[in-house]
Image 1 (cartoon, helix red, strand yellow):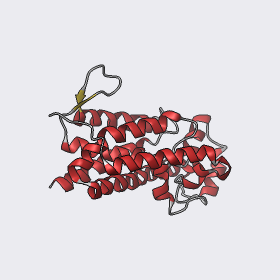
Image 2 (cartoon, rainbow, N blue to C red):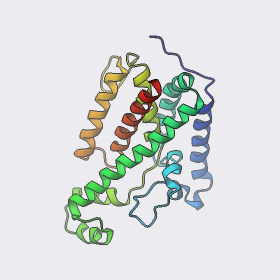
Image 3 (cartoon, rainbow, N blue to C red):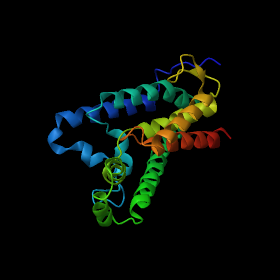
Image 4 (cartoon, helix red, strand yellow):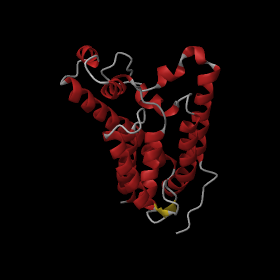
Length: 227
């Protein structure tokens, strides 16, 4: 099946523009700490605000330029096809609903990590226990409690999941394989790799379960729309 990139996609074009504008604003108006305001904190954290469930999808790390680059490239490559296939309304439903569900997946995982170490969901108790843990355990617990989520990765993963539903045999490259493989197989490999990385904390600071949740959500929503 031949799949082409849709350069005239309405929703994708505007989403990319908004993400770039917000990213630029975090530098231009750094005094307002836009990253902290828009990122999604754990619901048990005092810094959590309801609006962050949506706004965290539009803010990316200032310290990691590749964060926004990879997300926008993936959105551009896969998003146009889904928008062209389903229309703007259904595309936006997949994008935002996947982003919300992806965050929910990550919050559930983070809460599980916290409960594993603390046997409680009391942040005050968790802080006291931090001093009793080794360095690796401290990083794992602290990041689960206080590291806010940011980026469109969950929402974009949802678009990739939907793409895998509609174009399962389309070939893409995925590291470390030097040859193209079908999207359906690629996302299975990616999900497995993300799960292992998350369980063994191989990439601290990366919301692996958000990626998994986004892909699964997009695939299932895409399947619903296809039927």
